[in-house]
Image 1 (tube, rainbow over the protein chains, first blue to last red):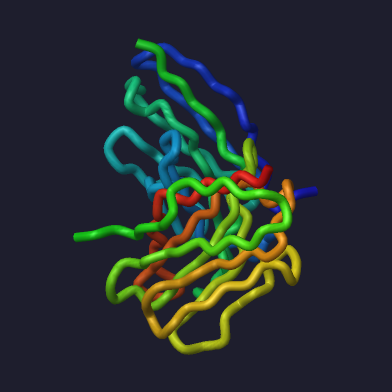
Image 2 (image 1 turned 120 degrees about the horizontal axis):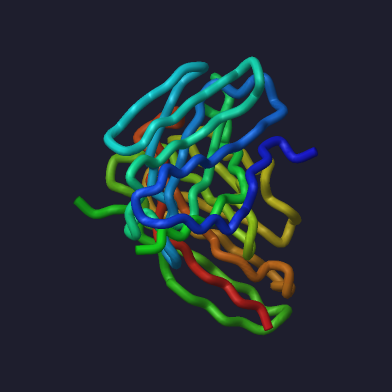
Length: 112
Length: 113
């Protein structure tokens, strides 16, 4: 079993839909959870950063972490064609010197 | 300000040749990371530099891979005797300190024929 599992999609939704992206993980030591967005032929850019369990909202984006279930989610409300990209979850332990562990990424297309 | 830059953006090489990939981190960032992204896969950690500490090389897949960083500046990732399975996008990221947000460069797309 890989440390981080993420459904690669592809996921296609109409403009305005609510999108739900998810990752599960096996390492209970993970404390910091991130979502990155990667446009084609670009490097990943950080979207959301959360610590431990709970919700965090930023505009149309909401990140949820459920440590008891080892499950994290990213919700995108009122999705736009410009949201079309690959979304990667990433996580790491408490120590700042541990590298990020990434999911495979979910490819999202928002159709106008 | 300038972000992380990488060069070349694309590299095509023949099996068995050596390649060098370059990363220029954001000025002042003490931490630098190299990742590999194979087609349809997530990012795979390769190596991590933090200031003047010994690098964390735990992700390097074989002894054909090595990386150097001089101080808190440029880093080069070298792949010797390239193999077809080395074909991937090699991404570099830097952060102010080890625990901070990582900012990624655009990557170098390596194709080994």
